[in-house]
Amino acid sequence: MSLLDVEEIHTYYGQSHILEGLSLEVGADEVVALLGRNGVGKTTTMRSILQLTPPREGSIRYDGEELVGKQTYEVATMGLGWIPESRRIFSHLTVEENLRAAIPPKSDLAAGLETAFETFPILEERRDQEAGTLSGGQQQMLAIARGLVGDNELLLVDEPSEGLAPQIVADVADALEGISEEVPLLLVEQNVHLALDLADRFYLVDHGQVVDEGAASDVSPDSDRLTEVLSA
Image (cartoon, rainbow, N blue to C red; front, side):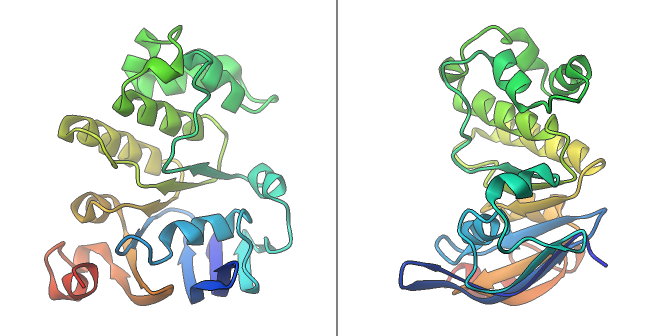
């Protein structure tokens, strides 16, 4: 049994039918990439899993337990973490305060901070700086670090490289690769090279449905299998 099983979900925004029977699964030791053009339902898939935008039909099981019908905070306490595209850090809190807020009450605070600072040394240098004054790349590092210290068993990562300089993208990719050795990832990423480098498997989404899937090693970013959909 997979850690996460999404089966035939239909999700709407008002009357707009966004996900039309989408299915996927994530194993306990893998990175799965969701590929597709903007607006085809990738972020909605994550929001559906987290019950931020619950599906009207279908099933989402995490570690064998049904998520549909639960509240988002209940899903979060089960071990699903989210690193959203918009980062959603606390801009007026310091870097360290942001991290402290993400560490569960019963977890080792010092160990959590050490993990975050080992992953992103620049955050330790700026631990007393207000998060809103960080560069965009540093804010993304902080968002990822918050997900890392949250004692999560699965991380949903949405567009981690968006708007970042190439060197920062490389740093973020290295961090995600390290994180994936400990925690499985469901990754939404427009940078197909990065996504396939990190992923074990991929799902290609178009118009709210999975239209292709397979091992990441079996395709290249410029393969006809992908470009026919991604460049449409």
